[in-house]
Image (tube, rainbow, N blue to C red; front, side, top):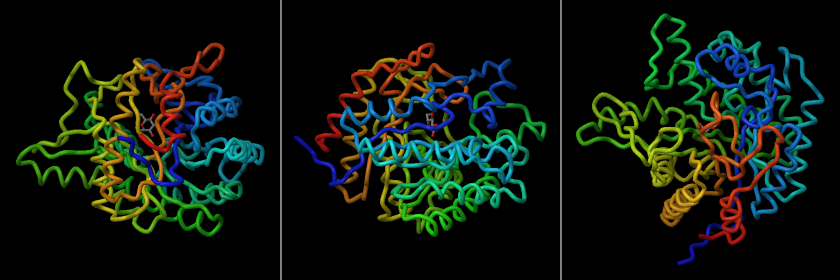
Length: 390
Ligand code: BGC
């Protein structure tokens, strides 16, 4: 049975500057890629050269039938030294916005997607002037946002708080826990919340955009008897970030998989042949769980799915995963969730934060020639976008 999505639904794909642009020499990830190369961390290098090829990338989306593109602007390029802004880089991102609009793509612009200028890196979000520094950047970013309808302040603040917290623990002499299991650091989380709330005010005062942030939703499920631990972990992982979004214009939901919480905490994904190239459980139903939980916390706030996808080398599996995720999403809409759009992660097989193997893209890229090769999933999802129905 055909199931239509709401009118004016956004259908698109997402990327992030550092994962696609190339040569982001002035941010903390570039430095980490060099410093940690001996530990197997790979190098972003030229990435996909989208810094120069963004028009080609966007054209692939619009030709396939999509009507939206989410991308981020790079703080380290725009503010290469504290208080010194690059007019040329601001103009570059304005050209990206204009190009998207010219191609019929509604731009969804993220102001901060994981990377920080090197000069900000020392104490990062825990520095006394961190929020002021971020606000100074946001004010400048607003000068290019005229006519942009959707602005995300900080991407996955809870994951930023995981990474920052992990670095704090290592710096304090705790051994690195290779098996993972790090939780977001609540102190960092509170600083990010302050930065977000200040940024929302600035974006509202300087633009007409809808403004919100995007939270990594873990679709956590309690093992029998572990309801209290589940509530505790859920608060630290996502609810404090969701609650901080109350009063925003929308909330971005990002979902890939689901995890079980027992009395000791989150259970790592057990080895399984169905696991994705990230080692995550294959759980297309996670998107429905994530939307329902977001709604439980925030009520009827507009929701944008700002990321959902799968790391796989098998494009048929990508289609199967996404088809199922969209069915779960539609169920939430049928139940009253105010979902405004679905932005797939990702448009391109991009730099997965220290690794190139986990491929999330609707399009693969030859990293020698930068030639783009659309996969069948691009046309498949584009035809859903054209029909606005599954
Ligand atoms: C991030 C992306 C990342 C994706 C897959 C999200 O955590 O926003 O940058 O590539 O998930 O891991």
